[in-house]
Length: 259
Image (cartoon, rainbow, N blue to C red; front, top):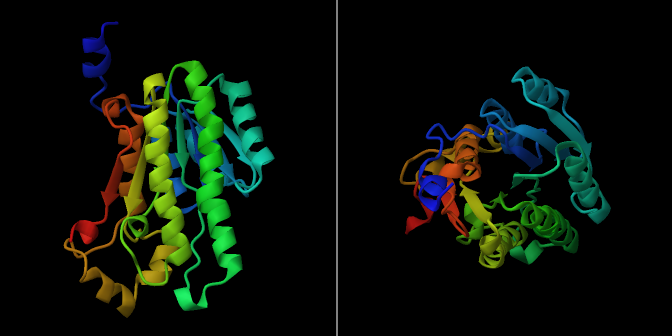
């Protein structure tokens, strides 16, 4: 196929048919919605999380897609390699990685603790980077792929009580750029998504209150986001329609960071 057809004749429905996606943090929240939407779009899924989710597994198979569940800890290098090895053993390749697993403990800078800092860095930055490196190396061997890192608006602007979380997410954005620079020549695209507050079950519990109403007034769109909106963004970045996206950070925050 010539270059013109390869890059211009993509599926305009953003189909992921025939792709294999490894998704971390797939058992709940944003990761679960990404997993479900990927399955609806035709991808076979490798889920990686601390605990398996029968709900997610059943949903994937109900869509007629294959599901491989790997339980593991993103802070354990051997668990990361085990997930990659099992995915390659079953499917022969990984076309898409979504780095969604993360934790979010918030505290004022003057009261920051080593425990929160170390845990946040271990999961959100180090673990995600090691997963990207492990998967990316297989993508280079197999001719390309798409890595999608879930960052945050807290990695773009400073937010109160976000010292560890914001620093880790800023690191994710920079890691995205570094890998994009080095691996673009091999057909591996690395991009990030930086959402505002997303109304997952936990988000609803934390932000459906006066604090949330006050925060929404600082957002030009005057609302928070929904996990399906992040999933739709991830579907686009995983699809062949986004073949020229490399090193981008898609900020979906209703305009919060524009000023």
